[in-house]
Length: 218
Image 1 (cartoon, one colour):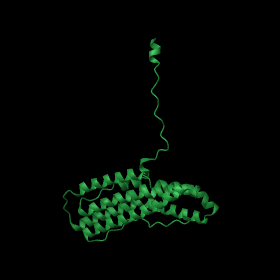
Image 2 (cartoon, one colour):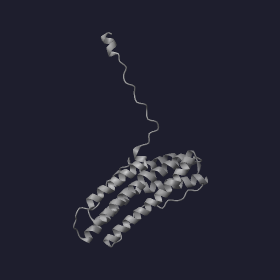
Image 3 (cartoon, helix red, strand yellow):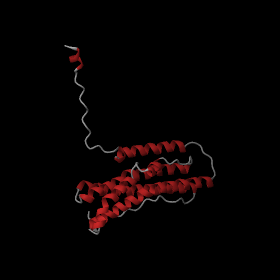
Image 4 (cartoon, rainbow, N blue to C red):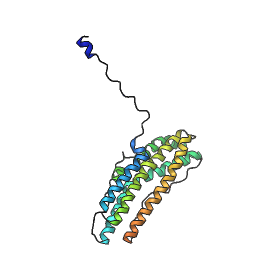
């Protein structure tokens, strides 16, 4: 065999291309694991001994809630808008001009609840005080991050599908599931703030998570 023949070995076959990959930040199971890790990290931090006055604690927790609601604002508006669009599409009440605007609006709504949005990235990285009340707000940060990046994002994507395929059973079923999990996350967030209130004997601002409308036509 010649040297040229020896060098003519075939390259190893390329791995098969992935089919229909789903971005990691859209998988609820992955997000749940990431959020649990976040809460555990916060728990470790808040278990460290911290001594501060009640007034200082209240001020710090109010700052956290202000940041949470600021970071959530865009996504909260976006998912509310997406559900309203779906309601109007289902009832046939959109004008021709409005129907032409729907794809662009829903793309913006999707982006607002994704980690590609800097505000959502900031939400996931809020630092909470190392205090007993801070532990509950650490859990709140995890809950609201999951609300936005899993269920709100998933609901918007379902509505995008239904906007062009109104009888898509998979999207219809998933949208109903997303509505339930969005509501459950909202209840959890309210309970976590209530626990922080109990610890501090105060009334912190509530999380600005909308009570979403129930779409018609299902």
